[in-house]
Each structure stands twice: as C-alpha cells, then as structure tokens.
Image 1 (cartoon, rainbow, N blue to C red):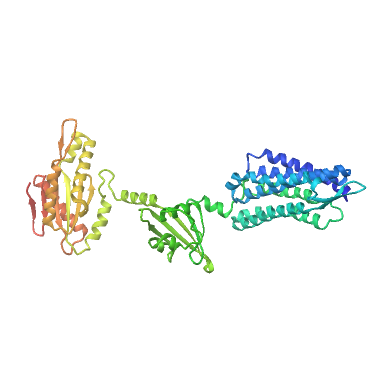
Image 2 (cartoon, rainbow, N blue to C red):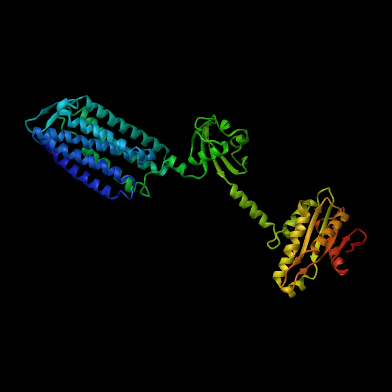
Length: 506
C-alpha cells in the first residue's frame, strides 16, 4: 500500500507547489490568492514529508514525520484566513490581528522540535523493517488535533451561515467551497481513526489537492467578477438606504451601516439598537412610520424628509424597513413644480397657473376681484431702447407688484407686457384702491438706458366677480376695463361695474 501511495504523495507535493506558485502570482488580483497559496504550500510540505516518512530509514522517517506538522499548521492557518475572506466575516479584525494566526504554527513547531525530550507529542515511535515508522500519539497531538478541527468546524459553520444569507446566484459557490473543505477533513478522520495498523497511510495531503482544485475553480470561475461571493451582509452594507430587520415584536434583529447612522441622527446619540424595540428607539414622533402603512413620507424634527417602506414578512415573522433620505429629492421636486408654474423671465406665476387658481376661486363664497395690468407704450420701449431694457422693465414691475400683493393674492404674467392679479376676499372698490397704490409705486421705478433713466407706467382694469359669472367672464370684464383705461389716456385704473366703467383718476 505504501508503495502505491509514495508516488501519489510526490505527485501531490508537486501539484500543490504548482498551485501555490500560481496562487501567489495572482495575489494582486484577488484577496483569496495569498491564503490559497499558504494552504497549498502547507499541503506540498505535508505530502513531501509524508512520502519520506513512509519508506525512509527510521531516523529519516522520524524527522520527516515531525516535518509534516509545520505544513499542517500552515494548512490550518490558511484555512482560517481563506474562509474569513471568502465569507466576509471580520475582515478588519483579521487585518488587525493577523499575527495571531502565527500562534498555533509556532507552538506546534516548538512541540514537535522538542518532542524527543518530553515525548508529549508522540509517546513513542515504532520502526518498520521495510522502512517508515508508526508514531503513537501523545496528549499534545490531541490538543493540536482538537484545535485544528475546532478552527475547521467554525469555518464550516460560517460558510453555511454565509451560504444561507448569500444571494441566490452565489450559493453554488459556497456549496463547492464546503465540499472542498470537507473532503480532506473526512480523509484525515479516516486516517486517524481507521488506519490504525499503519500510521503512514495518511490520505489527507493528497485529498487537499481536491480542495485546492475546487477552491481554485470557485475563485476563478465561480463568480462573474472573479471575486469573493456576495453575502447578505455585504449587500445591505453597500446600500446607501437604511435597512432595518425587525422581528414580529418590533425588535431590531439587524441594521446596516446606513441605518446605524440614520438612527444615531434621529435619536441624537449612538449605541447599538439590536434587541431593542423600535418604539423605544425612535420615540412617538416616528412611531407611525413603522405601523400599519407600508409606504409613507415622514418629516423629522430637524426638517429632513424620509421615505419609509415596510415589507411585511409572511407568517408574522417580522418586517424589513427601508428608509431613504429624500430631503434633497423633495427640494428638487418642489423647485421643479414651482418652475413649472412660474414665468421664466419675471418669476411671477404663468398663465396656466393663473387659470387653475381662478377656476378654484370662482367656486368659493367670498368676494373675488381681478386686476389686469398692461405696461404703457411697451412696444415703443422695446423699439427705442431694445429688448433688454424692455425685459428689465417687466422684471422690475413684476417684482414691485409681487412684493405689494404678497400672500394676499396671485400675480401672473398673462402675456407679453400684460399681468393679471387675483385678489380673493376683495371687492371692486378695494381692488381698485390697491391697483392705484401699485401704479404710484411702479411709477417711481427707474430703469437705466444708454440715453438716461426710464420711467414706465401702466394702465389697469378692475372687475369683481358677479353672481352667475365664471372665470372667463371675470377676466373678460377686467380686460374690458383695461382697454377703457388705455382709451382714456393710459396711466390710470378703471373699474368695470354692473352699469358703467368707473375711472380712478391719476
């Protein structure tokens, strides 16, 4: 049997060394390369030492048997390193405490190097006439074995947990990884527990070639990006939205980094929230966002706006809450909405918005007055001073009237140099008096031109909504009063009443 295994050990050592070189060559391409190089280097040393231990003279066989264990230590450390990177567990901690991986190899190497004096690793060694030796295990060997299988077991548990949380397309990669890790572990148990008559028949280093091959394939071809598989934690950690997982009682089961930051802002302090009820964490102000409604917009005390979406899990298993900060989006939306109803030049409302507001206000019970304003001789202004001066006249006039009206009414550019003002709650007399005040204010405005300052005036027509009239009737009568003001010499206000047109003399 040993005659068959020795060439296999040598071949396994050569293949493992080749794997180690290829993996090391790709150390700048993937974070898994260095750990895989360490594993295959350990397998190469173990296999080569196993070949000598199986057929060499007793002295050489004993030395080769001891020489296996630094390779074993490399495999265990490499396995821990590889599975930590592969599953995404504690990478930062691994970088900070990577020196701890050296403790087991150092202690194991020290134990086997001093074993001829204390015999705590091998209690004795039996030599064979045809070459090779059979060691009899001592307490330190079993401590080493227990540690190694504990590390392997923890790694396998992590891999299973990561596989369950991984996105569907990566679960196959985890399965390949698990099978690759179990193959040499099973072979080692068989060698230790069943091949007791000849301790040199150790299948483990040969089976590690299967592990290396499967892990190499998983790393190179198992994922499209040729990177480590994506786990559930990695996915939600990459999201900029706050993701919170709640159980059926409303307790936090998990939160991603974005949620930690959001909760710290909402609560005004940091600290872990896992295990606490969301009602206790967020307080009554935001309590309704997690209860009853699957999607809603919530405003916080600091003025920010959040979109809260709650996905209920089936069978009362809790919920996943996704919170997105939409403050900037809402600001942009409000700005775009406002721009859609504003005149691009003057900044007052446009005619479409005026029509919509007027149709709402004519159905009300309170008085409603409309004022139509037209800049006097505006065509002459454009022809004489240019359109830039004409635009400035419109801008200054619209700003002055808008400041005077304020929130009491609606100012809109009706077309060209014509403006319309709606005054809810005002009758014709009040509206005419206000229009007269605006006329005096606007007459004080001066616009600089190449030939000196320019003063612009306007004519205004006022009408009050009468019973039975609609929006078009009101604007038509205000427009009729405006033309009457123009006909009477401009720079004046005329009111359209039920019987006659009345002028407010300048």
